[in-house]
Image (tube, rainbow, N blue to C red; front, side, top):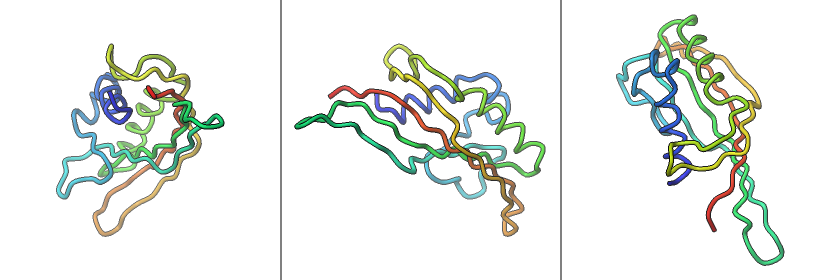
Length: 134
């Protein structure tokens, strides 16, 4: 299973987040006219560890997860559930066929408002530590 699939499955399975956003979790962009609240995710950077002539499979990508809502309290509630879902997580992410994650660290948060759409957002950057099959 690819890491993005494992992350998506993990987010969908977390009860507190599911109660707020249902299945409205999207890669990269929020669809036009999407029902809110919702969450988007994208890889914003990544580091791979290498040995002399081979890839070790160990990687430390940073994913930005964004919470979107029609009002600030709702956006904060989604962000809190997202934090509870991911911060300091370690284990098999995505079920039995998932990815073994060593750690997830919350690196930073940014809040904002899009006046064109009347939408509140909170961007959260999480660093994931895991090893891929090589």
